[in-house]
Length: 340
Image 1: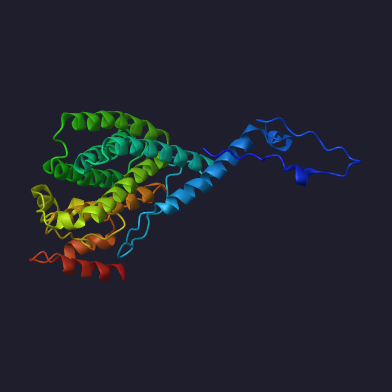
Image 2: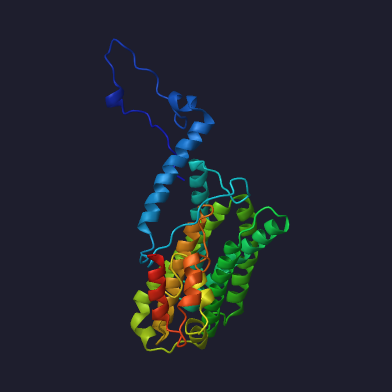
């Protein structure tokens, strides 16, 4: 952590005329008098400000280059100011949460880099086992809130289930590729997932915004990992066949849940192509980018909306479905409904 501290002025700048004795310099290890007068709250706020600048720079360097969603969707209005999902507006709290999340994410990445630096499929198996956990944790807490009648929002549960369903099929693909062949990999993945679940539940109950940001960090790392893998092994992957689990998921006739987790897109605006193993990893990488968008939207209370819950999409479901299940025709009809 970068600690904001006002260092003593150099002797050349602090020198005064010989007639006026210079004030004594502060002892090493102590803050100057002006900084101490600010008190502990101001000192912590200054630290958070410096940490926020560092966090923003790191985010800009690792920003996921995701394509813009097409067509765009409007965010849901914010409401429910007194329910437990509303976070605090204190900016320094946000920066503290993000700093903790980045530290935790970097720590996990260091462990994975050390253990799986040359075992890609095993690393992907561990990543996908962990990636499923937050969505199940979110649903668990939301069901608890529903039970007590504190907060009810069906879109959140439906979208989080669709995200979990997507990550499940990523995991099935990695298992088919042999990522879980060693017991030590299975043990490490499930050991981490067990504690990650309870950590996410506690974090989500304390601050949903923090939990969603942490999941965004995890998904962003997953995107970067798959993107790097594609660049290094692209030609080799193009010569390998696609796993059956990928064909069953991405080429399924019923892609309702596939559309559901991509909250920045209208339904049916993205349909994968699967010709080889390279296409499979391209689609997995793009899925992680869509997860990033959804997790980012969730950090603003009330901003998450199911792609199928708007009136335009309801009209599309009843008016645009053709006997041939022509997806291009559905997309054209969605465009027309959005321009009404």
